[in-house]
Length: 379
Ligand SMILES: *Cc1c(COP(=O)(O)O)cnc(C)c1O
Image (tube, protein in one colour):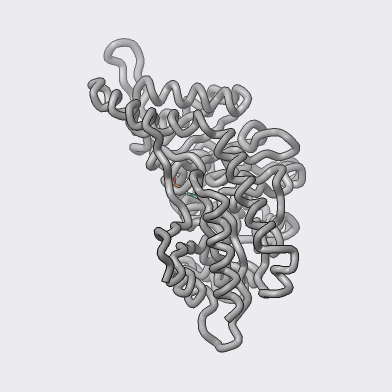
């Protein structure tokens, strides 16, 4: 149909300086964790207001390690949202703890903090909030709940680098901040993540958990006192991360501009006219990791999202879906979760779509996507 090249919903861009820096690492003779990892951690720490930061090979293990540092395991409950990448709940199970879901707010699509409070029991040890699309929850309220009930917070800020709350960067305050540098995130390492920690003791423990629990002393001293794994970031990945991180401010500003253009092109009557729900128009706090719509159900009984995705693809536009409700995935059903438990998440999980949004996207790409959205939803 379209003569223009296919517009993907996400796409990483690695500049030439970064490619050269990666080549230098490959030629240097030191390709695993080394000076680039140290430099990346140093820059991230400065960015997050001097808090300790450690890098890992994924955002997933970053969250798992935060839970381990908090001492969470068998017998403990951790509250999280059903609308996230399944990693968010899987890491709770990995530690031996029990995932407890609280339904989402239909407007923000983030965990509903009233429902979090209602889900707290004497076994609750932590909350993992997710900032979907980079939109934070009410951070004052979140930390008031944590304080009142003596809970740890592991912020799944995988999508929220560059996001803020009351002019403070997400990650620069609070408890644990976990970020991902997977290929589709606002900045990438190809694969990787980082954890913002509270103090030097936690940082040392993070180092142990990421490398087999090992502590080294002197020339040949080596001991193991906790069960760690193999989660270190390589210098190859860190060189990519450093190259990307240099552009963080421009990236966030550009994505905000694209989001504003989406709103302008979709128009103020979009929701009324097409029955689809827009995201919260937050140009203050969100880093606009994604631009997501919740589709209306179809009158002809066809599945709304699959039909939309297919018809957008025919028009040359890639559409993602982030995310199906976690509690309805087979392994979670086998743990006793079922339909009807979290009705808002179930509806959003079935009907949410992600429109194209990436760092080198242009305003005319936005216009193309919007034309296609309107033409598909009009039928
Ligand atoms: C990307 C992502 C993760 C996982 O990060 P990886 O680096 O892929 O392990 C977890 N939670 C959310 C919300 C994400 O978007």
